[in-house]
Every structure is written in C-alpha cells, then in structure tokens.
Length: 321
Image (cartoon, rainbow, N blue to C red):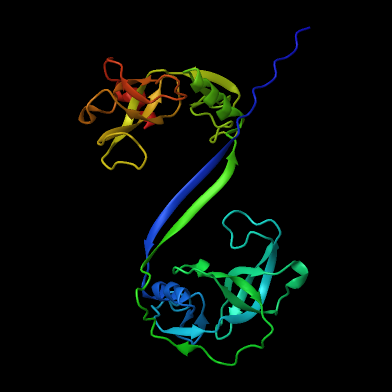
C-alpha cells in the first residue's frame, strides 16, 4: 500500500509595511505641537464654549472653522483606562503601562496617552494625573513622555486665552506608519508561489463557472465555492490594457518611462499585471502578444516581452479587460 503524499507546507514569512507620511500643519496643529515643545498644552474653544484637547480645526457640531486657542493645565483626571501588559515596540513606555483618557484641567474633552503606574491596581477612573514631559522635545505628541500619578486637587483655573505664537514654530511632521506582521498566502497562493519558483504559472479552476483564477484565491468570488483543480496557464499572454509610468518609484531601479500592463495569460480567466520590456514604451498596445522573461534565480518574471506573434483579435480578450 502506497502512502499518500503529504500536502505542501503553507508558506509563512515576516512582512513589514511602512509608509512615512510627510504632512504640513495648519495654524491650530502647528501651535499645539510647538506648544508641547515649549511645555505648554493648548486646546481650542468651540462655538458653544467647549475646550477641545487635542485641538481640532473645525467645530464637530457646526463644522465651522475654529481658531480660538486656549492654554490648559498639565494636570487632569483619568476618565477611563485599559491595561497594556505587553508593550509593543515604539510605544510610549517599554514596561507595562495603562492607556488612559485624561481630561486636563480646563478642557472638556480627553486626550489619549500612557500612564506610568506599577500595575493595574494602581490606576482607576477618577485618579489625578499630570504630564511627565520628555527630556528632549521637538514638537510632537511624544513630547509628553507619559502621564504620572499626581496628588494635587483639580485646578480651579479656567482655560486661558493664548495667541499660539512661538519662535520657530513647527510647520510639518512625518508620521511613521508601520505594520509588522507574519503573512501567510494560504494553500492556493502557496502553490502559485512555488510554481513561479519553477517558472510555471499555476491557477485554479472554479468547478461551477470554470473560470481559471491567476493568482488563485482558494475560492471563486463569483460562485462562492472552493477551487482545488490546479491548471498551468501561459506562459504567453495578451496585453489587455496598460499604462505608461513617468514617475520613478523609490528603490526601484527602472528608468522611466516604462509600461505596466494587464496581461491575460493563455488559459487564464482574468488578467494579472506585469511590466512590459524589450519594446519602446510607445509601441505597447492592446492585443500585443507577450511572454515572461525570468532572471537567473528569480522567483517571478522580471518582465514580459513581445513574442513576435501577430496581435490578438480584440474579441479574443475583450471580456478580460
């Protein structure tokens, strides 16, 4: 009796998605962040007299532009909290802490930040806290290192008017958006990726509508049934539509202009995208027959080039555009 072959191991790999976003600041956000650098917490007063901290530029009730800045106290009261027993990289504190919403004295809304306490038993709704300023400040929310317990009573002073004028105001910030996670493509795309390593393109056919999906998704999005019947498609295909890229991408060693196209591989039920090479960009056209070009050791086609065949008839690919 022959033992059944074990299924291939599903791929898993660490993946980092990051997008450092540079943005300019309006007068309200500029004053708020510059104020933090100077050890001052600013809010903004709405049309109905409420003080919002952090400040916003438009009244959430009337949608009117608001610019009346006020200074509030660096002390406040915890309105709600949640314990963080396992801080992640780049969070405010490296040891366990509480996420808290704090209504600063003089404000009507709460600000989210970290509270440095020894454990969850040391934090409660209604406890008094104060800002712990960072030793080095540059004009960012991290200028507030965290909050800490404070024994003083609530300040009776009201929010004081502030002109928002500082020397060398902060006018822009870089938001470091980053996501670290482990990605698994699943059974279907694992087979697709392993096939590419052998210079094959593997799709899966829906048992109901018989469309061949490349890359395969493991299920037909139209019929809602699982796809397990593997089909090798291509290697040649037809350009169904394309665009000319004139802006050079960061870390991409390709001279502009170049062409990215949707390519319907022979036998596939939908088009995938790929770069077109081996032909001047202004000679790429719908219906152009192309084939993949693999670099030595490459795990996917580097680009597609013309096969030299006559162009495909429009009726042969119009349903795949």
